[in-house]
Image 1 (tube, helix red, strand yellow):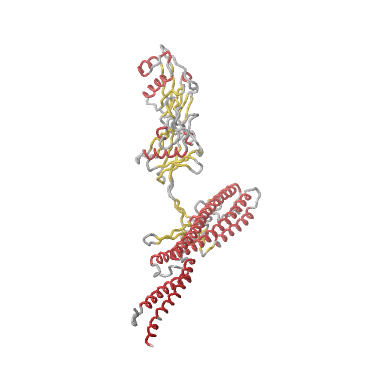
Image 2: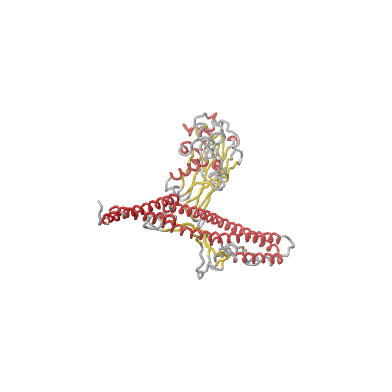
Length: 592
């Protein structure tokens, strides 16, 4: 039916047109802005996330700028150091020429003074962004000085919204060349006790004695490495490496690698417990591949000794197998010739004197029928054919009775004399009327060698104004006072004493070159870190841009197609509304 009061068709057409117009406005906005989420009302969650990421990107942009400024400061200081290294090399050359007889040192000093002035000018002018890291003033009144300069290198936002910044720390105190503050000090931290092997183990595929290895038995005994780690004060432990202790770390006992050996040593150190070595010492390899032992504790109280045990056992490894050379705690005297069976039956007597080096005198050992009979079941061979093992037993009985620290053993067909004393002050000497009958020569002596040892150093605080003008480590001349690289003067150094002074100053300059080179190395490491961080920040900003795009960017192709369709729909909706409105006009015509 047709109603004059309600036009349902027009109302429907009008609603459709309004909906199409709303969609058309939205699509037109997306096409014009390029974003499907341009306001919080579009999508509150996506808008919030995108806004936060944009904020983070703004912070990262500031970090990138900071890294650029930091890189500039590092480059400036590095270039200054490079120039000064060249100047120091020139000074060293001048000093070398000053050692030549007949050279006018006053004229050489004129050239050196010019170079010294140039170095100071170079350091003073090494400014970047108002920062000078080579020529500083660390006086308390100078609030701008910082011993450690911090370059902002990173930005992070935690899940709870907390913001943190990471820093690249530049140690200005260790690279400064000049300091106008005369009262500044340099503190060197205490060091740990360390013992370093004498030869490299790098590339060693298997540790073996001759042709044997840990998996091969020799004379009924597998190969071993035995040594003792002593920290003093009762904190010591014996380390034994064999097929049993290595099986947990070594894949192939016939080819034990350096890393596997190292792991096994540290395992035994840890297993010794805190009462001995656990947590107090570690084994490692230095850059040259040498085995090192170092204490965890530092200072003058830290001591460390590495001794090798049981060197007389031919079936065991020696110190050289772990790269420490032929070190021993006690002397070992091996007879020069093989032992031949002795006849001590009847009235036959053999006399040997053994001096254990303790100062108590030599012990006279007499092997005869009485000594043989007193030994009883301790000997197994006959008195007429006394073998080496029994001869060593009879010698030990008499050495023990005399409280001697020496002892005898029979190894590899020869008699061996050892003592329990350690170090270079220990010795053992064989002598006596029948010394040659035992295989020794008259007066044959063996002296002990010290175990490899190291001690820590205490921390020290010295006055220092910089690498070039520091007063710590300078040379005090015989005739002309104290010198530093920044102010030495050789014009008054004459005679043999002057020559000695010039040579010492030359050595001082050479050490300064090493110190400045070390400072350059530190700056180079900082430069590498900053450049790497700049690359990372740039990559991170691009990743954030992609994240924002995924969240808020509109698909332009899709939106433009949709815009075309909505425009067509709008035109159709307008026509439909026009048709709906014309219905009342048709009813009106009935009354004409």
